[in-house]
Image (tube, rainbow, N blue to C red; front, side, top):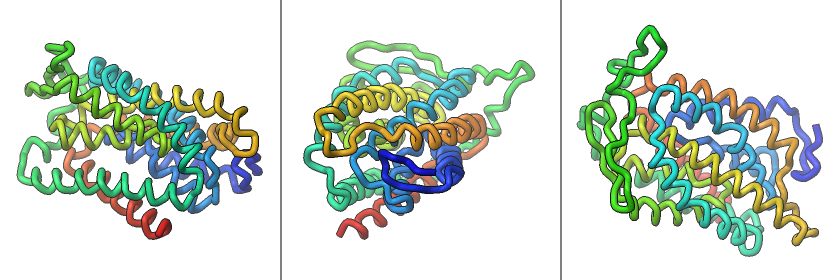
Length: 307
């Protein structure tokens, strides 16, 4: 099948299958998988023009809702956390798209930038996971305390309950433990993450989820739904912005490749739902180690190609 905007030709089952596999594993950590789909597009398929970022965000638009719905159904979607992250990342996404088009159109420079971002995020997550390796809470298996009752609902201890949400702090209860985060710090971090996410074409979730887990010490089981939903919202804005900018750059492919986006999006929808459904049976520490390893591997690969 030929993809006109991307300027490539490939078997349609390939991007569909890769998107399904990637999103299945990454959705367990609250990440859509777009950050790994981008190297696949660029390095394997040869899709290197700026529209790859918009196509990646279109993947998020289609892939995230099934995972979000599953987390919401199980009572693990913290709405105040979701909205705070989304409001903070939206402005950054717009500015990030402008930077990507005007200053980072060359794939070589783009790979160096992406590699440095992923190296930092992956290194931070690996360090915090290593320090917390003896923490029983972090290594807890959700399968032991998150059993589904006959009605198909999560037990009360595994459902998130918001206690406080204002301009100063957000406090919620998960698994009988209070978790507190500064609303202002969260909003500022979200703004910076949105900027990087807009440039990279990932909506910010791949960076936000590790920060929430490592920097704010929030449980991965509780933040996954919030980061996926925030990724969905910011990706809708990002795709719209790239689409509106396309007429102003007639000599450059800026708008998404809708055909490619539909294929990877459908694969992502399947993988996202299955990953969200299976997440509660996977230890949190294992999820963190998996995400850190993938991030570091991708970062080293990108930096090697860029330099």
